[in-house]
Length: 183
Length: 80
Image (cartoon, rainbow over all chains, first blue to last red; front, side):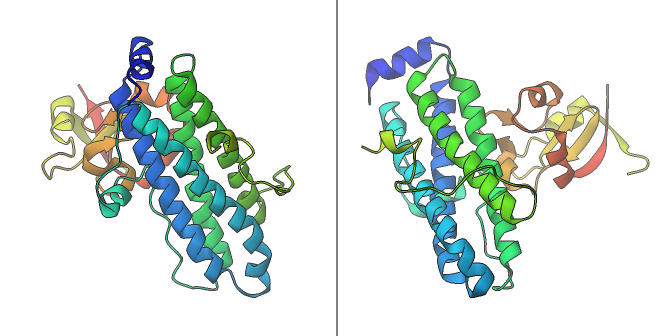
């Protein structure tokens, strides 16, 4: 634990135990979404599915990066992850994504994804609101993740016909906002 | 719901989602049953909000609006 780092955050008025609970819940949501994207890779098939594979893969890697970037901050602040994967899964900040019953229902798969990304956008907005001006390191991390989650939401929202995302796909490295926490 | 049942604050407080109880929350005078919602497991929402109370003020600063409560069943209207 980074003792002074925790002290200064507490002194700034943040309820660190509450913040830690939120960070663990969101780390769980990232890992469960990473799992969903992984099974999507093998279920996005056919002409329609194939076109989505590359962007789904980018989001998959970035959600895994979010999980990996969150873990050190949890331990710095004196928190920890649950001792088993099932306990971790069950406290996810967002309902775990699940493939639709019809395996060729690409729109259904995307709808599940958009819901998961929207839940993440709300979650990191909440963490940013709690830490702004008080816990600079968690804020910086949550803001980085929020930037990427908003892009994910808009990519998949575009595919569902809700309007253009305004973005181009990643070129080169993934996680342009969170990458600095992974070095 | 055409004629929502009156729910007192003490009845609302009883439904805190703990020890197998239902989880109810009130927003803008409407009482919702959030027991079955994933994000309200054990009567707690995102580590910060507890069932059994009036969350109208909390919702003002939440990163979502009352529209998400459409997923919950309306059980009544809050009365003093």
